[in-house]
Image (cartoon, rainbow, N blue to C red; front, side, top):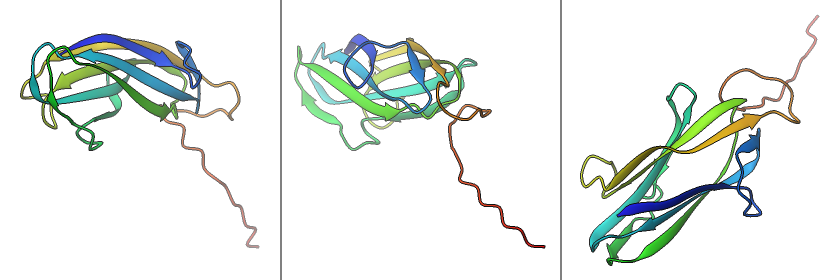
Length: 142
């Protein structure tokens, strides 16, 4: 199997390279089977500017493995997510394989398949790679 195209889209289907903190996005991956495959799994990882994985998953973990894939079949995978990320530069790695991990039958691995930036246009300032806004309650006790 091989990766035909990787796109980062907004919810309207427009290509994007810059996301706002908390913005909805779609990681769209087009894949073609180059031969008959008993099963096909697609995984991705969002990495920070240092290459450390911030989040990753695959279709096996999401219980959506493609089985008995025929040669020449083409698929579009749309991973919809909310970019609850801190300001900075990020990349996405893509892997095509069989089973839960990429150890066996690793068909294609692509680092830097997509590159994007996150900016903060409307939230209170915060530090870190994740946007996890708290609620705050202060009680006077004396």
